[in-house]
Length: 212
Image 1 (cartoon, rainbow, N blue to C red):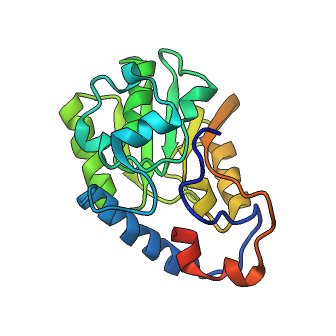
Image 2 (cartoon, helix red, strand yellow; image 1 turned 120 degrees about the horizontal axis):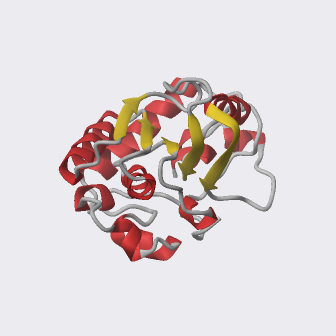
Image 3 (tube, rainbow, N blue to C red; image 1 turned 135 degrees about the vertical axis):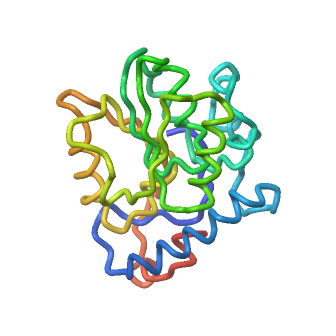
């Protein structure tokens, strides 16, 4: 759905026997650096150049502060599946510095609402700052996990996810949360990466392959 793979490994859609908190801490550390030092140089693309690679239209980014764009590290463009309608409500899983939350906010307008959810403190702080700087009053950034979204049942018209679903060891639980927060008839718009062959159980236990 969009870009060529930005990371070397994607786990299969199953519950993986892995210490989830250890994995989360490794992910938080990696994306802390992306938030605080976006020009650090990573093994995956970031920033405005990445938005061009994965197919964001330039007009979608108008009004989105550069501090959000510079720390963009998605793997696709969920808006290629369809633009959001005015007045809709969206949840952005793993919102990072908030670029997709703010693109969504531009689409839904002042009558809509967007909740961005992330678990990395540095990204949450940056996304909140960017939303305030850009005047996106309909965007709220919340601290939370994909496996336990801080969003009411049936609240959303659409759930967005960009490059984070592959990082969940319990994908069934995440899908269950997506379903819970969607209204009846709601939709998923996910940009992520896939592998074409099975990954060994041994490889699934290696934290550096999840984050790298």
